[in-house]
Length: 340
Image (cartoon, rainbow, N blue to C red):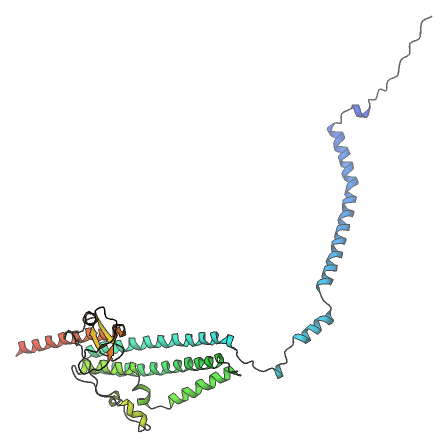
């Protein structure tokens, strides 16, 4: 009898683990997984947004004080304007005040430079003016120079007032209403200047005196200029004793060096007595001596050091103009001799 053989029945379907996934199968599963995860992502996002909003509200509530607290703080910071008074300056403010005075001083120097330019233009015009139009131009320049001297005086007043107030503050004086005090003092000094006569305003001005002397030397070479007051008409108020010190003696400019007896070269002027010398001559006189020596100018009893002699650019300009006028005069004299 034939023996029976047992056969194990095999599953025609292979196990899923033994079968490699194809591209189509992977894609299908991934789509299913993404579809399952999408609702979860949306839920998480909504939760995160809600949490962020909650934190933002909490921070805002912490950062913003209560309205009642704001009102209390405003009441504390509010200034009682009706009862508020100006605070006096202290010593720490002195440097600021001196800075303002320095600004005014700079403006004064600017006006002084302008005055010098006006005087130089006037000298050049006088040196070449031969008609009435030229003299008319000189009169206009003189009026302009007087106006500039007035402006310079006003600026100097502002500088002086600020310096005086700063000195008071520096000494410990408590000055209240400093702005009103400043304007009051400035106006007082301006009124005092405006009340002066023409002589009192300009006869003592070095700028005006130099201007008149330069013009006079061109018109009257070699002659001494009379006192400046001779060029300014007398007014009511000029009879006071203050005019006595305005009447100075005649002034003449000597363009020769007292030492070399030759025309001045690179002139140096003594700040002690006002006499001028050629730089080379006065330096040779002192040599290495730094002490005092008697002025070599005839009739002068003053003594000075070499360090007291300063370069005089204004005199050097006058010297050049003088030399040019002398040459012009010689040419005119030679021309007259030829005609004769």
